[in-house]
Length: 470
Image (cartoon, rainbow, N blue to C red; front, side, top):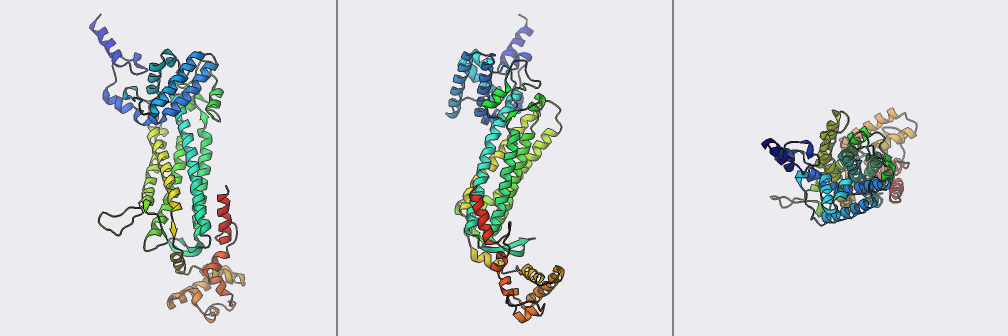
């Protein structure tokens, strides 16, 4: 045997851990192994990889590509691997690149040649696309459940405070009085749309890529519809090139996740403002706060602050995925290995954030007196006075100007509109009567907005109960 032949055989032996090693004459360097391996993060797909493999094996046995004995051996081996993973006894190897080859190698160790037949009629390209969809489908279901719980938590608090008045703001300036319950239900609506978006995204996630093989399909007599049924997919991806190469379903999920975190961030900003001693509208439970290492009096709202910050990372993952896909020709490219970490982190972030917020909303303690005092500042019922004058026959623009003059008078006197005497009010317009004082009260203002979407306590109770009844 020549030295060259001996060296070639040694290299092949050194490289034999890879499923594709026979094609190459030298081993992959350690640096390249670390650079290209994904097992450190894609091993979380193990249970879904096994789920997809079992459905694939069942189909192969049904169409006669493998024997029933092979199928039973594969099922037995996979059950053992699942148990080893659960018991943290499974040995993950970076030499085997990814979750798929790690599981396949262990399966062959346990059951022999039957394990080698499992990969018949598929590629890691359609395998990983299937695994991600199975995993993401489960994450979407969890997120939808958490969003529903958060909505119900907000609705419960809203029902309790359907009559509690606080100022509504525009430009962070006092605008009109609203009820705290109405304010909370605004976020319930946002999170409701978030759940709808995820449910719609799930429809496109829930399509089976398996059977596309590397890119062109397979010559084996496979039954993709059977696999789709076994895995509870709604259907199959209709083009093999598209099935293995696109990640638009992951991008769509990340876009929905970014919107969830945007709504969380807006709510967080309000919580941070509301707990400030300068505002004092609410307290949140101590378990969601921390203190200062130097200032013993501090109670910092760390959870809502950090949620605001984590919104940036989820937005970043969306941009990273969009950038990842924009330059890829058909079909699969190694670039797509970079789809997972950002996707995983986005799902983890919304799951953890929503779980915490469900608990935090339940622990909010409200200070109605502080809210009411704030609502009495800034002439919050000025629009009500204008509406009153319109109902008396004034054009709205004239009423608007009249009330602006009254507000200027109050600023000079240092009082509220409701503090002006009837004679003072009549000086601005003679149609103003004694009944104006019912209009200028905070309670009268919110009660008058008794229509669908309005802030009236009656409407708040109706909407809160509707959400709780879903």
